[in-house]
Image 1: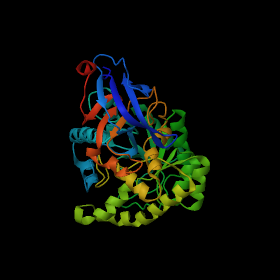
Image 2: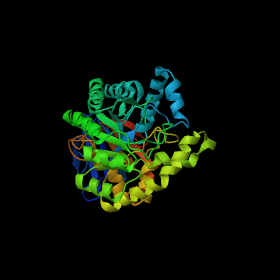
Image 3: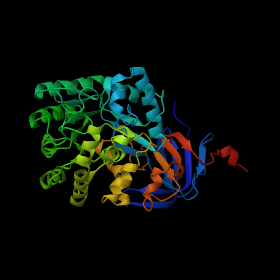
Image 4: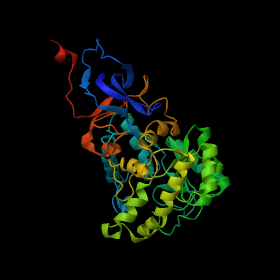
Length: 414
């Protein structure tokens, strides 16, 4: 059933091209989409429409997080829960995590790995209207080498180009809307070194080819320098994490248009929370191992003009659903302007995920994924991380949150 029409009056609308807000506009949403953007309020608002007076507040697209794990809640030892809890318990937790995410203004996510294809089933449940949550591009399982990062919980193992090709095809058969490949070791898998490359160039090429044949976007978990370069050469759409970027890798990303989804929050929380908070010691050790290089690499990528899209790795320890906007603040502290940080979580993220014809901008005909803020995020980016500053959230035209009065044309009639 289509959501009720909504009219947002007297709002400042974010213009992604000009990187500014256009004052005094009204946005009318019908059938889940942005129907009209007007300089004057509608005089013929349909009966039954909901009217929100924005009173000069700031309207921007719903946020997009390009790297989440909705089946994880950010517990300090998340791996133990994944491996021991029954599927039903994990599903109920995933429902809660999806709701917390969209209620924080994140209206689209790319979920890059879940056991039992739970992220694919969650995406279908949200699309069917059974559950409250963001639009989910689910990758199913990631694909890793035998013993590689992610094995045993969010990734299936493959060795050799033909096996990688088969495992990618299996994710597509299960309904994956995105594909994740592991090009290096990582922090959360015991016994795996994040500085070590994993899949060979030929293996990565086979996986990318299968995904792109099916018009799926490919993200590569890549922390090690050699793994990053292999992934770029293989043609992945985004490098996830990008901890040890050297000058050559940065130049390759600029030349090929490869996006960086840095997920700065994940190692920061692991390292700074530490064993005192219950994070396993091996994770904390590796968190500190990557942290300084990770931040230096991000700064270098920004200076060089690498395409940036926001991703949190939500679900890693103390990286909780609904707290996604902390990533924007970290990126801004490391060199992105407030405007660029906002674009990384809206227009640029939509471009990476090939959703520019659906979301990420405020345009007539796009889905009504919208946030109404009390404060200008171009001046005060922290407003996005403060729930009380977000007054209205629409996800595909459905009101998720409305902390302002809702009226109807009938109630406004003299």
